[in-house]
Image (cartoon, rainbow over all chains, first blue to last red; front, side, top):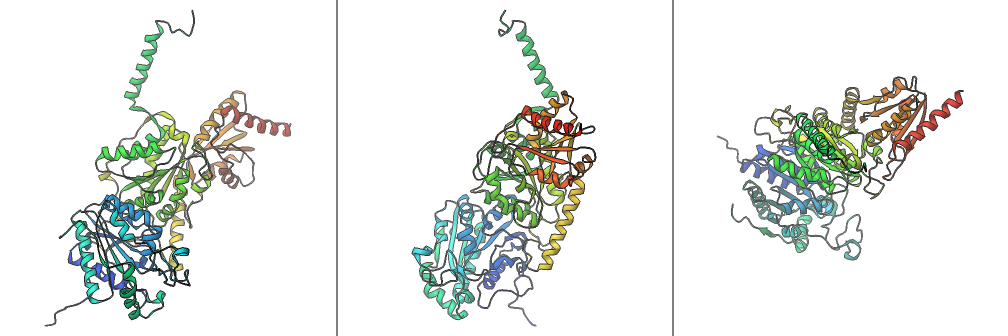
Length: 249
Length: 386
């Protein structure tokens, strides 16, 4: 008898990802879907995709999905969660979406302690628009709007939104992970599960920041992109639990 | 005897009349309320259970009323948002998940909300947005104005869409049209704008409220996001349609809806227009002033009427077209430099003369002032014809 040991998670649709080769979104989508299935919450979940590469997340996640304008994920998620407090609500946002145009919405949702989960995918650039500088682009990193490399005097230094959110009164769980190796991917899944469990326990605002490769815009091979996250990106954005007021769930 | 000294007999008489007035208020369920509070109370009674807003004068009384009423109802949500943008986007979320939701602001704040209004239109989400207009552009001032007509009726935000715009002109109409706004929003799945001004918001008038709706008896919304719960396929509410032919079809679908709305809800009040040689066109506070002016010139024997659009979009084109069969002069009066006048001209299509009088920047014309303008235009026409 054949036993199925691996397949498509229940809450991913049978649709091919449009993401570029080596992009981290497809891994992260899968991890979120696996967690929704394992926690048995997919049927009561409403997701909020961003503007950016992951705007088409509703073509992949097989849960109710409501699109937010650029950067407003936390505000839209707030409206949903306050209306239906017994449902699970997550927003899925990129670095430009959450740490530039949506900074205010995100910080205030965290400060209010909105009981939502945020999946924050940090790839250090504006991917969908073609690789412009993001608030998280590293110093010296080239982008289409920092052709000579990001210069602190001209372009400002990268912003660490997760650390800023940790100061907010109502945030209870914030962790930064990566999807660069089986080990970090497993760690990311554990963090995503903990973030959703935090929401299930009505504890408040939870967020997982995931360092994710963008080989096409970084002009690297997928392998080099992953190596670059481990060697360079983690120096500015170290992988760690940034805030944990929930403990074991 | 000095007439200013109230006689001993007059005191009980005055008291009695006050008592009778109060008794009538109780019997008629009449309450004396300021406009902003009327909208708040009417919204709560219409089943609004989600309000997000941001402080801005001259409409803070509405936000404050919602803070109190959402708490009082127990099952309502009030959020003082970090920005107008956040407030309107919270409304998007609440509307997606089925709540009757409202946000409000005044002119500069409404500019910030346009992003969300465009999304509400594209995603076909019901919502009520109240604009208590103040002087502009820029920060302008906090005095009553009608400078946001273009923004309200031309869409305001980006893209090919329309917003239903209701223009109340009295306390009672604030109550009635707020209820109507929620009903239109739900039945057409579209944002509805209530366009008032600082005068409407601050003015106190007696109002009779409609009975509260039972929110559990409202028509079900078979499109909301509330979790598929294993019972149905998952749903998507989106505005991004990368394929141009899909986007074109969505725009056609919206257009067909807007045509249906135009056929079904266009509304205007006609006052003394049946024998009029001249008709004043005005909405909201300006219409109240214009009505006073029309009464004055009627006393002088001038055959002048008033057309007051209640829906600014859809605009009562047909009423104007009918009037233009026998009315030679239209005077558009606005508390702006002239915005609705364009819609009047479009409706009249050159069949009659269209004149304009307006005071922008928060200046409130008096009925006498408008009556003088009416007089001038009216008599010039008669001189020409004599």
